[in-house]
Length: 424
Ligand SMILES: *[C@@H]1O[C@H](CO)[C@@H](O)[C@H](O)[C@H]1NC(C)=O
Ligand SMILES: *[C@@H]1O[C@H](CO)[C@@H](O)[C@H](O)[C@H]1NC(C)=O
Ligand SMILES: *[C@@H]1O[C@H](CO)[C@@H](O)[C@H](O)[C@H]1NC(C)=O
Ligand SMILES: *[C@@H]1O[C@H](CO)[C@@H](O)[C@H](O)[C@H]1NC(C)=O
Image (tube, rainbow, N blue to C red; front, top):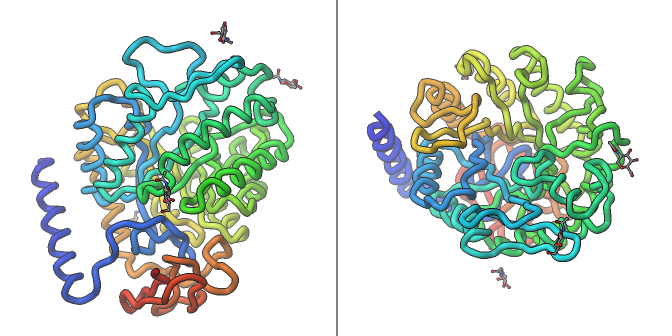
């Protein structure tokens, strides 16, 4: 079954590239992700993309399993994978455990060894080989893999004062510097993400906004190549139905945060099971957020979403709502499953080749490719434009394209009727 699917996809791919070679110059193999009009440009393809989460990918020594997983993700037509970029500890873990950072007020250690960041190196290298792009969050709001509480244990304060705790923030930036500079030239990085689901319970929303502004500017100062995003769940939005996820109780203001200039795009998550909402409610969650993104001139992605039951019935409408909404650039379901991986599954896992995979992944990817050429005719205000001309690798022409037709850097190069690009 699985083998048959793989060879079908391979056959389709080689047919497509033969066609491309005859009709058009093939898109370049690999480049940094940029924003083009109202969509992302991933290796020369502008349009809506689908992706997934593999949080555990950096936490195994079994590199064959990493390769197989990323190969299965890529051959399924997904383009983006979100993997964790943190593993914070307060005491040295048992030998063999993979850890990235030891936090201690009198001397923290960033582990670049074989039981440390070299495992993330492997995932980045494997993603490069498989033509996938990674979104990498740099700290966890929750206690899994350490999180903010690991900093609190080392530097004092609590989970809400963490955002302004000088010693904790200094070490967090030291860690960011170590990770970001490691992959600064890698075309496999889609974006750096400040945190997984940052919340500041009961705080003024200005606390997270100020923190996000400072940290994102810091990352931009280190790395001009990659996009930066917040990683929040989209909690706190006045245009919804006023139910709990729309409230500001968690200290995030979605509409305000996506206006932060140094955040290139917005994120939100969707878990009706955990939030006490119905499944159909999810589509309005998508639409209200997309509208806020359009108003902020930013592209957004639904970067985690899942349903515990009846995935085909419950998740597909959210995907359709997202694809149909201006302002939405893609979605990443939670989470990719493989039958050979034990210990990392949860009630949201969608196993490769399963019946849920057929509707949530295969049908979704087919629907996206059926949409091409993308309706990328609206230019959202964002980091695309440099002055009034497009940046390097940005779009500079094409049928229906309404954005800048000059290049701030490089030359506007015709790729096909739908797409011209600023190339060096
Ligand atoms: C930090 O490290 C020192 C020296 O190894 C140790 O004595 C201390 O208990 C550690 N602090 C914490 C909070 O773990
Ligand atoms: C966290 O620390 C801040 C600053 O000291 C304090 O105002 C707040 O009440 C603390 N929060 C909790 C939940 O203890
Ligand atoms: C990244 O590329 C720049 C420009 O080519 C180079 O100067 C720098 O050393 C590279 N950094 C890494 C970490 O490879
Ligand atoms: C979702 O979109 C696909 C493709 O456009 C369509 O075939 C399908 O009926 C839609 N499903 C739902 C539940 O909206």
